[in-house]
Length: 104
Image 1: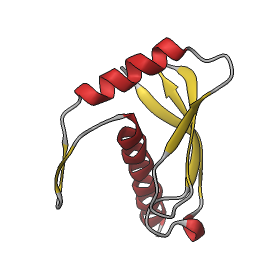
Image 2 (image 1 turned 180 degrees about the vertical axis):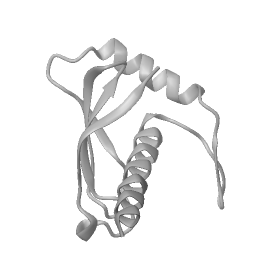
Image 3 (image 1 turned 45 degrees about the horizontal axis):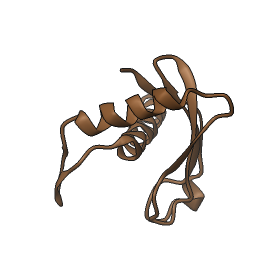
Image 4 (image 1 turned 60 degrees about the vertical axis):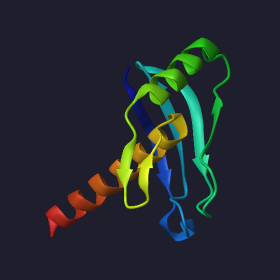
C-alpha cells in the first residue's frame, strides 16, 4: 500500500513540541484524508475528504498497524496511521532541509 502526503503546509514558527502542518494524505494514488497537527505536542488528526472511500481508510489503518514498530530512544513505538503520517512529515522536512543545504 502506498501512502504519501501532498499539499504539505509546514509552519516551523508554530512548531513547539511537534511539527505544525496540514497535508492531504493519498493512499494508492487516491486523495483520502486531510491531516493536521497544531505543533503543541498533541496528536495528528486526520479526517476523510468529502466523498472519500471509508473502506480504504480502514484498510490503510489496518495496513499501518501491521507495519513493524519504529525503534526510538524511548523503546519500540507501535505503528499506526497517525504515526505513519508524522514520519512522512519528518521525512519531508528533512528532504527540504537537505535540499536547502545542498544549494549552499
